[in-house]
Length: 132
Length: 331
Image 1 (cartoon, each protein chain N blue to C red):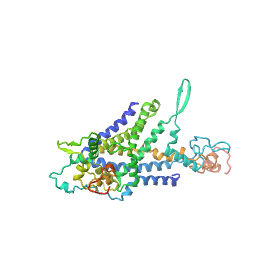
Image 2: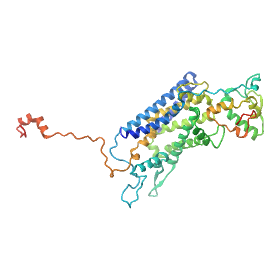
Image 3: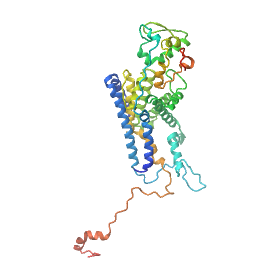
Image 4: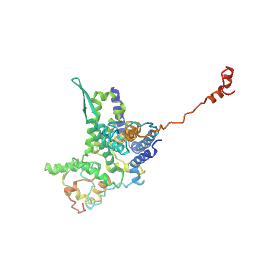
């Protein structure tokens, strides 16, 4: 091999960059977050059900809430009719956060884990007083 | 010529189809995510190393830099220090401009015959598309670290915030997503529509373009249309890099399409033109100083010649020479 020193330095840099995630993790996986449903309002519910079904809420709640915002603020229509035909009052603070009163244990759990920084809280505040 | 375009397209579509089927069958999901990624990572890592070491074994007996400017000469002749470097500093600058800013693409010219005149004119499209594509790809790859490691490094969060700074839509669309989509489409259109470029384009040129376009489209579809549970995706990715692989339930098939295309790209990487990532540093037309006349360069495979003296020759054939009556120096 020619220019061995230079080539090895280059390959070492390549290896460090490529192996960075492996070295950074030290062989231990971060536990998958479990958003907590342990709030008085949810406990009091006869049937533990969100506005739409759980799978849809897990994957698509951000687009769903964005549509809520547009419907409430741009169209002035504050009533949402879900797939079961039930009417729901559109409000993040008064509908969503009434049940999910534990922002820290619910919203933030997954958002921090996935590195998501939603701008909900640029305008809204958490009525249950967790520091934003 | 159509086969050169249609064959790689068919391969990419076949990968998409297989991954769609495999990703929908739950017992095949570990195969189409964890196993595939480990194999692809290993091929990429060791293949890349082997290729570079193999290149480093080739001797470069003579300085062959591209002399894109006036070489170092007499004091009153202006020397082009970067385009025809004869110092290490000049070479480092030249490599910096080549690797980070694609200087040689910036110098791209087009030649036209216009009403009997041969006209050379600068054309920057290739440079612009290439620069947009490569930097977007880099930023997108770095942004993906948020799904691989925990805690997330600060620079990844900063990149994420800057890239999505216009806060268009939910989840916000990234600037690099738009740029890479436009740039890859542009590079593909360039190959398809310019007759001279189409003439020299082979299946190996189209295949990475189709693959990357497939990766971009599947990624965008996953983000905006067929949403998947991102915490499950992170658990999978984080499991891979922490060597405790898990395949959480309920990840949509689109994720497996994305993974299959990415795995194909990185496993194909060491065997393809994509190796220019390592090759640009190894290129003797870029990384050598033009010191052909200033310094003595010994041929690295030069060995002392083997002599065969007349005495030895005579020893070898003495009997025959004697028989033929030839004069001998020694009896």
